[in-house]
Image: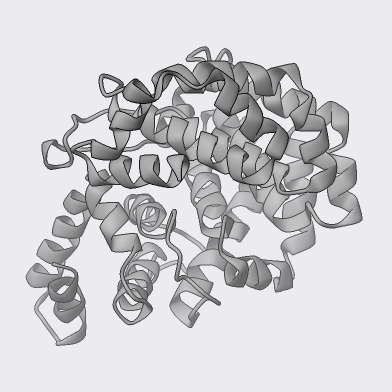
Length: 331
């Protein structure tokens, strides 16, 4: 399917063939299993798809505008991919337009909480930055980088929307966490606030999260052993905790934080075969992440882990994504 998508846009196919190929890719990206397989493709196959989607998501009639349906597809294509590298010209254009859109919205729009496009663009920018050193380097070199950091820092005090807060902190963590400004933004008091917010989200009590929180979704189909569902912010929230914990000066705070113990208390009971795929996936991702970073937290997980006869059954889960995640965690 991926090869046919590339061929449709590279061999001079008629527009109807391109539209059909694009619709097929959008449909396939509703499956968590397909997205996981797609992200594991080698760079020579993955990169042409990323370039095509990046080109399409920038409005050809207004190069400062984005097509939101294709920005959502860009989120699916990039989020979690391991072979993005330094951006190619089409992807670089999409990234610079995303940055411009986010900065412009914060400066010009009075209430960004009500702007679905802003939430989508911020979410996608965060997904592009996370785990991709080349993308971080490119965005750090943009002339608008300082303005992006400044406006996002101001935004943290202007909104109560859980989705926007999580993704704004994620972008800031990617860009400045290792700089002096990062120590100021993520001082102990603010890290504690972030953990409290994450705890409220994964405990299914998002509080002030609004409709834009629904933009952070995992869409699954029957072929992936699941049903269509919306997962509000859980994976993004867990990723933020893991990104922050990668810094020793934050990890030492997290290891003794009550919120971290509560997160373990929430996640560990999900390790059974009757749990829904999205919730189980988030739990395994979180537990594997913190266990690999901290001996102290790894001991806490071992002490509180459900009986192995129940929890280790996940390695035989019918969903390959869950089976692989469970194997990584228990190994």
